Amino acid sequence: MNILLVGTGGVGEAIAVMACRRPWLDKMVLADYNLARVREVQARLGDERRFPVEQVDAADRAQVEALARRHGADLVLNACDPRFNLPILDAALSAGCHYLDMALSLSCPHPEDPYRRPGIKLGDLQFEKAAEWERRGLLALVGLGVEPGLSDVFARYARDHLFDEIEEIGVRDGSNLQVEGYPFAPNFSIWTTIEECLNPPVIWEQGRGWYTTEPFSEPEVFDFPEGIGTQQCVNVEHEEVLLIPRWVPARRVTFKYGLGEEFIQVLKTLKLLGLDRTDPVSVKGVQVAPRDVVAALLPDPAHLGPRMVGKTCAGTWVKGEKDGKPRQVYLYQVADNQECMERYGCQAVVAQTGVNAVIGLELLAEGIWQGSGVLPPEAFDPLPFLERLAGYGFSYAVREMDPEGR
Image 1 (cartoon, rainbow, N blue to C red):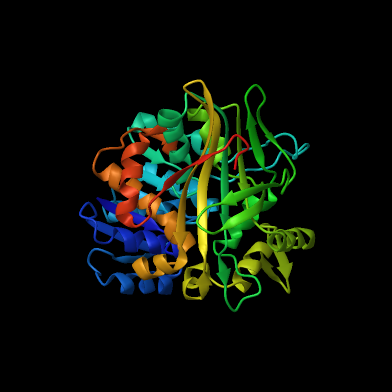
Image 2 (tube, one colour):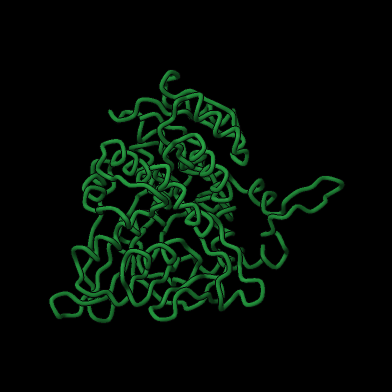
């Protein structure tokens, strides 16, 4: 398989490192706007023939399409912020390539009632293109990271193998990761973090459909496994709530993060000061997006691994019935930062995200996952995916919970 990888930040690097020795990979073109960063990743891989470098503006569809054609790409892998999803998606279709990303196209809050009604939802602009992808016989596999991605695979697995009827599905994410030497250092893209945490969260309920609520609403305490412990989790806008109900029948679907009060207060302050804005403002005659300034001031998540300690947990809590009896389970995967650094030289959060995209590539290359159109992970058999996790050093577990959800 020939792959055009657009974006060589932390997740893009993790993908390249994990895929480099897999027999199904013939070539992976490393493309990014930051040419120095691309060469840094290439140097880690030590194979200039199989990992050529290119400079590209991900917002320029024509540039991405030209690269895909020139290198004979079978698939375009989008490892950029989701603001670039649409030009990269369109470029892949124009070039006749399959496509894979790890986050859906951005939402736009309802202009009049943002905290009760959704406007443009996450992924709407991608799913609108499904018919064209089907007509071309090409697959756009969207939302295949860890969350969304593995969490969605867990939901489909629960539907197929663990439950007869599902009452509620709740994706729950928590960690005890700490970054030494920085008072505030997000371990993932701050651009994406601001987007998902400050937008109105979406909830799905049977009979009501999708609706929105206030950011950081409905706090609950959730007990995370493997020593992470109990954390307060709050509603956050996330793709699973828009994906799972399309494929997995449930009465309610939510997504909640264990963000921590300090992290929430920083995000609220950025919002209060207007530093979350993406529209440019004039600063001494220079047009600058405030959110880009915030991103430039913070450390690059791709280089935080040596300073990070702890674990991160991604999982899907499911409540329902099996054989006429109530059942609750938490399907989860925990990534230890020290283990990720030792195995891949990448910090836990980006490694935990990238491995799922790589497994998706493997299943596509081997013809195990097939299809056309714009499809999420829930559209495919989860077993081949879950069977491959341990081979990449990322095992998963299913924790039975009591009737009180403990």
